[in-house]
Length: 433
Figure (cartoon, rainbow, N blue to C red):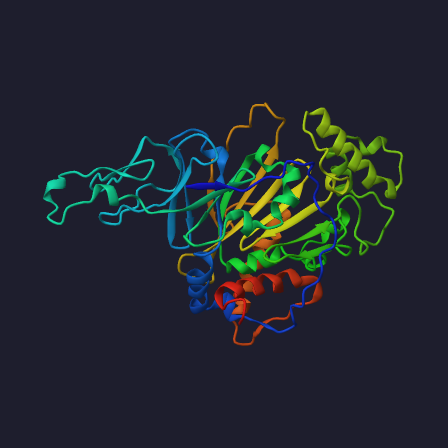
């Protein structure tokens, strides 16, 4: 049965204090962790099957019988609302127990029961066996009461459904740790999907996480971002499993040559904050505070309560990585979420899910749910910044397979990457390795 993470009832505030710095060492991170089928199997057996994995959004299963599928590695799952309320979510392995056929194709829909299309074995949405055609022909009998769909643990937080294949795992609340305290002030449960895509990338899932876990590369492949954010004065916080960095937006990078120029990217942000840059009378130093006020005023006029967010959160990217594979770019009234999933068989490939969600006023009509789109690498543009990453990452993966390359040398600005690998090792080799 589903368990719901407890939400504080007091006034919410995202902690901004700098976390203590753990000693992560300075050893080379071996390339085989990105290229080896053997290490890929260790990750699957000892990590992916033990951690809490994100399945999707509650908004996609509002009524009993509503379901969607989600895939992770070689497994597929059915996520279904059995009954109203937070404890009404169930997650099953998407497999018929008769001959192994997948019960549902990828996607979402509504079902009064789950019937296999091969031999018409049928299960109720609570997982119990409903019907077996010609049941009398099974000499060994079919134990109706013990032939239920195989269920995995499920829990919800922030409008998300999570599942865990390990029956003995810790609770989702314990697994998330500091995350609800930090992110509940954004009220993810009031955010709705406005973009939903999956792209098959020719790179290891960790290489994609790495690309979004540091801003050291901004000056290299994203030089245009220097006109709108500070890639130098970035706070990095490492927690027991998860991590974050706080990236200031609404100003130019210290690397940018003209510190007084109100750049075109900043002017676009000013328009997004609700005021006209052409009539703005302030200097460069006044832009960021004006954006903070403008964003707060605009949200309030829309009926969105952002009183639990601080001024920095009106402009900045509060960037959280929920281990092992959720990367959140969070702004005042929305998030961009990346879910990096391992390929079923090839360590040199992955599935990259990108979801954008926007917050709406309480009681307002949610935007229409967009269709999920699935593409192969290079078939569509994801926008300039992500296109730059998408171009670079397959080249990174090919380079990692070179006999001339040994592994990752990580600097202090990239320590979120080292922290992720340490957490992987806690699962793969044990915390007392």
